[in-house]
Length: 419
Image (cartoon, rainbow, N blue to C red; front, side, top):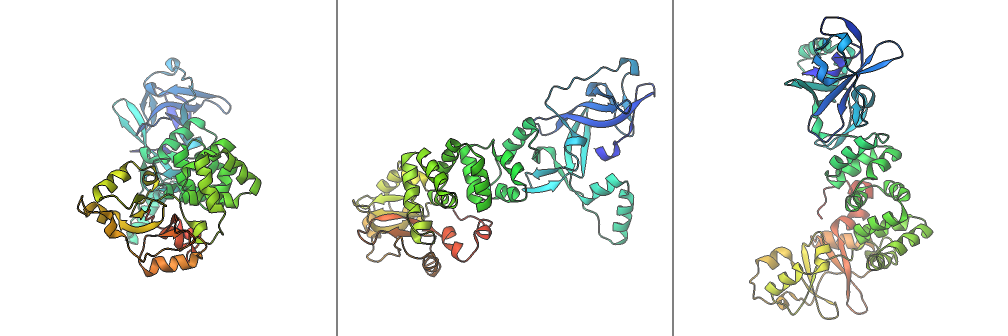
């Protein structure tokens, strides 16, 4: 393998051994390929002038940078705008390790030859890369041998690298297409380590659904910073993609005038769900519940209930569906059945047998701490919220929202999501 630290400021020779300049940079094609092809060398011919030599004229990079042609036959490469300069734009920069799901610093860059072409194959983020840059890799290896503690080398394949530089639109689009595939919780953790300007630029190209999922996992400060930079209509679209309780929490933290503007831009049904939640105290069951849950009429058989769920818009909105709630014609809670038991039950069995006189439920004004206590006491994954006046079911409080009362939100968002 060839490392770019070995090539820095090296002389470039033509086919007959004539020095024609020193290496200033290496340009690769900024594409989504697993290995980025080298397209040109950037040379300092003197203190002021730069020249670009196409990759097709490179004979070798190591142990010397040599061309295939004589100096009088060197052709000029004309940049097309899609190139990425490795020394000026990647080396020493922060990048996202897609595989390791973390933010790292580029200490060196790895190149390789395949046939007549050269490729960027990976980035070195280890301490060994730093020692190589300083020219004392040999010293580090000697010390590690004496201490019997080998220096770890960590090279991230280029296909798992995403740049976060916000002033290179082309490269940023490539990065966004890679980062958006990561779990939202990991994206949120990386955003917390970035400055707000870089975070906003990185998220601008995310689809609305992916942006909504990421915001749900982000801190309150990051949510407000991102939403405040979005066009109001797009911000409303993103809020519609969020769980109603998460959207309500975010809107509650925004200025009243901003919240009202966004609510008016949202679809009527989505806005109504959020308005209902905003009407309850923040730390009450009504304030932390979600209105998206799976339910079925009480008069169905098991087979009919499963078919009902397949065609139910509310069921499709329920991302968890550990429980299916049984309701009467007035949407009053009659019983609850776990999805597992429903699937395992006999198809002709009636749902009525799951109706119980006593069910664990809360009213919308029940304090959040009491909701968390009930969920812990009865080992529940969610608890229904019921209107005390008519028994109508209003929503559910999931365990991850209930534990906010015992864990700070920032810590809770870093826990594995059960839902």
